[in-house]
Amino acid sequence: MITFEECGRILDEIADSMPYELFRELNGGISLLPQQKLHPKAVDNDLFILGEYIRNSLGNAIVFYYGSINRVFGHLNYCELYKQLTKIMRHEVRHHNEYLAGCDDLGVYDKEQIENYLKRKGIE
Image (tube, rainbow, N blue to C red; front, side, top):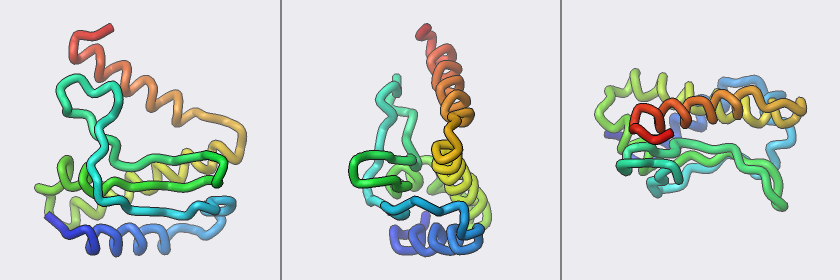
């Protein structure tokens, strides 16, 4: 398990390694919040939001939830956790860039993943 500060450092390192252009118009920046966030469709309190792309009147931002990350990936070694955080960062940055491009292919994929989760839980 890593600390909140270490998680933030890793996320900063991952963001810094990505092309700057991918973050254009991300005027709300990237944040790490300490809490755990359950997905609203979680059936058995087992579906967590690790990160999300947020668009609102204040702008566009990416938020990561340390509590969720720790709950889901806290058992991983440093290298494996780094890989998972990289996947989450790329996922959220893709949401941002798809929004800028006027498409939502990843949003459709995410909805399909939630539908599959609900089917596995016996909810149609």
